[in-house]
Image (cartoon, rainbow, N blue to C red):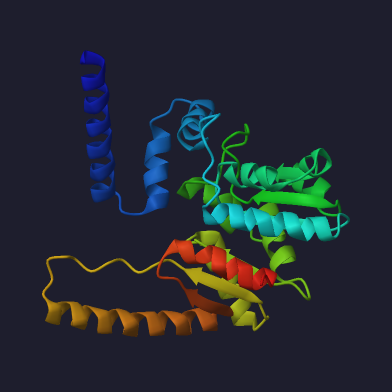
Amino acid sequence: MLECSRVREATTVASHIGTQMQAIVAEPLLQAAVGRQGYSNPELWIEAISRSLVATRGAPEDSGKPLYDIADLVVRQYEKDRHRHIPVLTFNYDRLMERAIQSRTRSVRDIAAIHSISDEREYAASIYRPGMFVYHLHGDATSKTSPILDAASYLRVLGSPGRHWSWDCLTATLFQRGTGAMFIGLSLVDPSLRLLLTQWAEKGLPLSGVYVGAPPPPPPVTLKLDDRLKLAKVSRDILHLFDEVLMQLSLIPYHVTDWDEIPDLLKDIRGDE
């Protein structure tokens, strides 16, 4: 009981520290920079991130999640033509996408075709190879390379767009002729994505992309009916304005009321009956 009590106390303290951090430093990139200052060397910082993000080995996979429907789509494309290069671009630091794709493959040969890319050397070697490639544009928590997470590390990308490998990967993948992109669960506040979309929208270059917006937050249960109706109207107007912004950024908006709608959306894209 003493040990459990200590765990609860530590969890409570960590929660309060996180709340205090958000109150003092509102910007996520600066929050990460403050957190990084608390580690004496880069190795300890990367190890801390890895412990927080890497899933526990042997944990049961929830194959009903949209992640596995995305993996199905990737594997089906590859099975139709094993000479193709199938890219999946992610800003996540974990390898859940690779695990999901591996769980959907039906042969040992196809498992060997799954590749995780997180640095410039790996990217350069992958460009013309066939297979299923998961590009971690901001790094991988399992590698020794420091991930792009805080304000200082983002300078490597934003300070020299076009020279960082992730920028080349984004533009080469998203603006190929005859290709389309789907942005799922992606925040438009990410500096790399914002720079990409605004630059290309300003140049008038076409981007064939569908942006799947997150479900709207539910109204507070304490609101009266009249206030709930007013909030619904305001939310609708905001959503309409947001759609106009997305269209200006060359993105087709698609809003879901629940993430569970993603599998049906992917079925439509695959052309399932």
